Length: 339
Image (tube, rainbow, N blue to C red):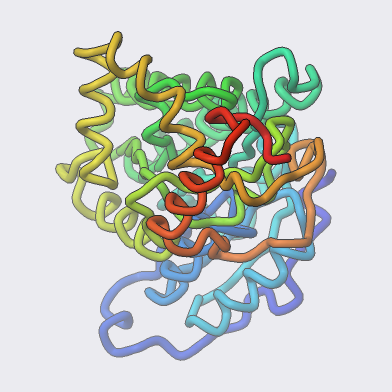
């Protein structure tokens, strides 16, 4: 793909700003993973503040839909740059085009990510490698090209979207778990390396369960559709929490209070955590009533189907009740595919 060759049809259009917004200079905000989920919600919320938006993801069609939402929300300008963050050259070209157009970058929210389900030996090598390439190496690529810009400016913020899974271990999600642990380490390293630039901020944020399309779009070799674990937040709420942390760096990294006991349990009672997570994961974080055939989902290529801000998980309690009923049926064992 060639990011520099794509633009949003209404690029450069101006929208009236509210009185509260006219007192501030619009920021230049880059959002990766802007075609769906938390990234899309974060982009629309920044648009509501009258910012210049640069929307980044692999799929041009879904980005165009997100761009229309941002324009309607009040963005000063919207640019669409289809980019695969797992490709370092594409990320470099993307950053260069942002600088050519705006001359600076104020905030980057890096939320691009993909997921696979299945035991290590069940997930095809190309799928597992692509999850790591997108989620971990993509974060490294973005940091490699964005951080020097922020350092030259002596100011700016890079937000790396992690996950509570970056503090845990869960079955059937090994490439994603590996990647999110790595993203957390990357954020720590970047903070250490940029202490000499007080105006350069690296924020790491770890959502818990968030209802986005990532679960139904995932590569899946586990036999059942994934779902966000409770308590489930909306993408809009998670995005609002991210923006509060951009403005207030003292706020905690974790976006869900339940993240803490889960992380502490794994750290301080690993024998108990490991014993419980196996049977609890299928009940709380999958949908045993929705069988799925083996699929590479949107891991190897973007899919327009299902690209939206919110997922379709529904009520957590109802989902757990259905899973318990399915698990307790005679002949079923926890985590076995529905039959």
